Image 1: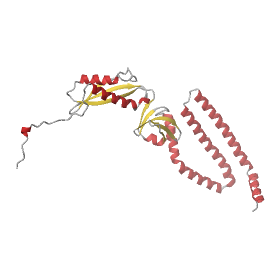
Image 2 (image 1 turned 180 degrees about the vertical axis):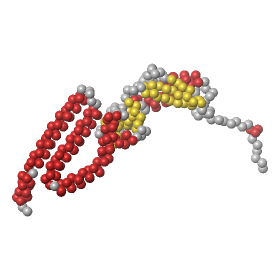
Image 3 (image 1 turned 120 degrees about the vertical axis):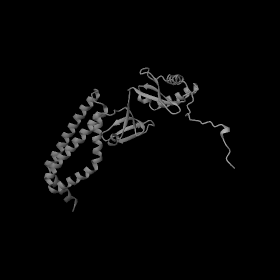
Image 4 (image 1 turned 90 degrees about the horizontal axis):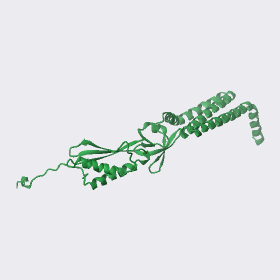
Amino acid sequence: MEFVDIFNIIVKWFNENILPLVFALIIIIIAYIFYFLVKHQVLRLKKKGKLEQANAKNIIVIFKIVLYIIVVIIISIQFIERFGVLAGVLTAAAGTIIGFAAMNTLGNVIAGLIIIISKPFNVGDRIMYKDKIADIIDIKLVYTVLKDIDSVYISVPNLSLLKEDIQNYGQERILRRNVKISVSYDVDPRLVEKALFDAASKFSNILKYPEPRVDLYEYLDYAIQYRLLVYINSSKLIPKFDYDLKKAVYYSCKDYKIDLKTPSLIQSVDNKDIKAPPP
């Protein structure tokens, strides 16, 4: 078959299918204009502060996907009518393959919608995820981007994120932090209380209200457990603040001559009670 014959076949096919092709082109143009108008409106609402940045971005993505699916379905219907059974079989096969491939993605998209609507956390929040402290950088439709305290970016599928227990420290909310120590019964509780308050006074970022508090937390077998409670209003201080507070408590107890070694029961046995083993 010569090139001219191939060209003639292509021209003939276009002539026979000119109406579906023109219709498909019109549908694509209308869809693009509609997408552009909706995107412009969403960005305008975001600029006015009526929509958060992450929500605006996800609305645009969702609308784009839905519009794309509608356009593909409409165009496919036109060509199914032209090509009959063959087109139907190919469309069904393609749909099955795409369906299986998209099952996991669809689950993540649904999870993303749940996160966007229910807002268990927002962009900028600091969370505890799988024993790691991280900040929410971006909430996408399929996955969420985290940044841990080592500045490592982590992309977590939204479905996996919903299945885990997450502690949300927020951004500017008041957070309670505590340090526990165990001290012998021989030490005056008032001295321990003074040492712990002195440790807290070293920090300018501890809130005056609610004010720091020292609790006699628990009576143990050979010691009393004390708890120092303080309050901060920035999650970005965690976990460094916790480490610094523990260090301050240690040095304060050392200054006040408070022994933090775990007390133990010591049995004293007189030498006279020790009998030599029989020969």
